[in-house]
Length: 155
Image (cartoon, rainbow, N blue to C red; front, side, top):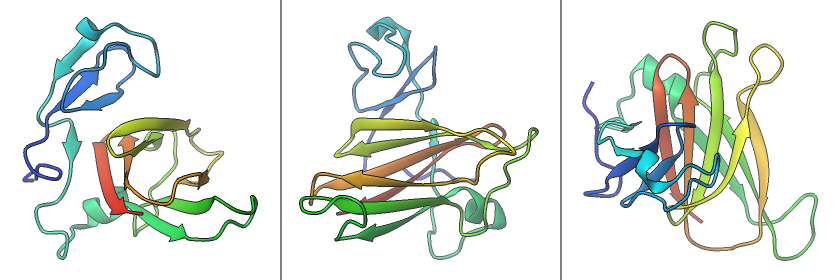
């Protein structure tokens, strides 16, 4: 499968301890595990994205996150928007042998949250409440068998 660069000539630096991905430059300190900058390794193939988003394979349909952005919040009143995230147009399996390990959320390439998923107990979906109304949302999921996949969407 061909891998497309996200938003142009972006580089990916992956923390060797926890798998966190930093965009363009390695983090001084990993926001997930606290590893120092020397734990990050350049990996140009760290994130998978189809070259043709209009013609997805079954594998891609199970891994690319779907985002539903609501400009009003169902839980917190003003100043909030809801983002519902589902992994895959075809719902990704959540079995011991094949599951989504975690979902990372970034705003304008800056990390904001990691959500760990447990196989057999959770569906590969979550809802978050953002306090911002603009920017580029990036959602990265990590499948234990097929690696990291990403979806980008402007808020």
